[in-house]
Image (tube, rainbow, N blue to C red; front, side, top):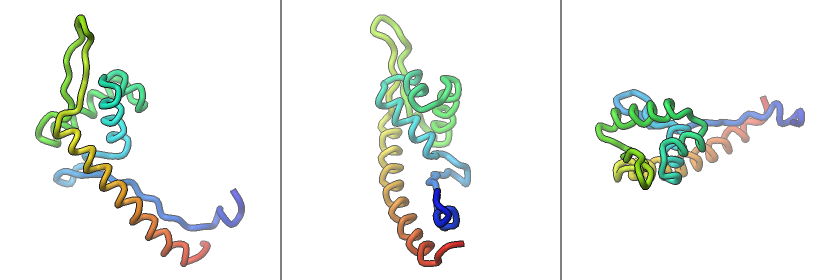
Length: 121
């Protein structure tokens, strides 16, 4: 990092959806849902997103509770193996989050232009 970069101001911000003032969906939790959906498995989705199985289960349970309905549906293993899939509500929530994230990133970029005009610290 150059000396100029060390003194350059920049804005960073993460998007978090809330329900009744309680944090519901953070970038890391959204990534977990994406990974579960892609893998078709809570276990594999947890691994891919850096959660323990128990941690992933707790997140999914909490998100579903806050949403007022399940966001992931699961079938226990058997002859064909089990699976986990996002419900229609879970899929819509991820679509909303992705759209909001894109708009949020564009807004942060605009604000960083204001910060850049301020100059170095």
